[in-house]
Image (cartoon, rainbow, N blue to C red):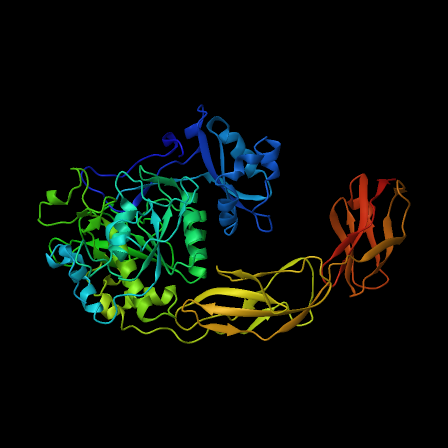
Length: 604
């Protein structure tokens, strides 16, 4: 277990678990100065840097092992979004951050934010007694006439999930990114993740307990929050990437807060790029302040309605805003605890909904899993639907309920009837051109790329018939790494829209050239000569694929360029410093470069 003094606990209301996770406001390294307690930093890496290698700047500080937080398993997950999580002594945090910011391999470094958790007609007793009003309010029983669900994998990224009561046999092996082990059971003081999972997949129609939305759904437990309900941002990002790699169709994030961070944003973009639907609680701030991850693009953000009144009105604590809250669902629900007892709301004064006098199940944390369960029903009826298609079915079938939410209250039955984008994306052309000379790593760019409805999800590059690389964020430029190859390479690009429709380019041949040209000086003043007037330097350059240009450099600046095979270049001494460092460089048509040795001249 990580020491609790590194994890701020905020946002838990007395006698109530208001859904969502609030990000603790840690803004500067100075917050940890003077203390030896470890501080977690998150590092975003520059393009082209090996995300799994140790940073030289850390090695020079004697902190080579600092980037091993979570071991190789976690390190490989963050490498997918070019990030590292490191842990350093608190009294060295400022110095380490300064050193990292001067490292060209580092794009940015910051304190890793901390998140904390708040909170066909079945014969199940809670349902038949009328204690699961939330299901009827979003038309789930009517949807069950069409499907009660299939084996759709839903990831619950939370405090863990315990396989108890109506969840027995439905919880898959998962992963714990808080303790970095394989035990993803729920050890929360309040079993937040277990309650969330029970709303999605508690076995219905078994004569006991409660009814979840999706009868056959499988729960992938991903523990990112500790028993006190808090966890670092990178833990959550690792959990999202892990869930995606485990083929979760839907990822439920009943957590959020006002802070935005590029690592979590990139992790969610990664999940979107792989075709998963990410559902997140809008939060319980009772205002329009955007909460994350709900406010990120391509996240289905869920606000809360008042279950008790049975109306479509916003429950007082729900965050709201039609610019970023997509849909709404009931926010006061039933739920199952780790000991397989059930909590539910029976009166307008819900003391009976408290467990040990401390908590009741209410908040947008519990609105979100109702929507995740409905998405799983849509996926059950339409197995080929990608994440965007599931979200589109939910948003386009929602019932308008006011300006506080973009689309309205979810409707499970209506969502099952919504169609899908079936038209593949289109493009005009892509580069590099046919027979182009390339070297090193080259971005494959596309012009005129568009999609009529859902939008572009990702672009994949194939080399010699095998998958090579991909890009899942605009402007969608997968990288062609020619490494040390020389000769013809066959490339092909695959374009996928958010609904999963695919368009292939034709196969194109490019020429890899990773051999540098030759270049020599054939006539010029001798090294250490004193010069005046105009100095002329003549050279000779050659390459199997041709020379593109030859340049003359003085003190690191280009003073002359030629493409003529005579390769004669000159400069005026009067325009240069008293001491001149002179050399010639040649580029071949693939962009490889070669320099001559430097000659030093003095002004006469």
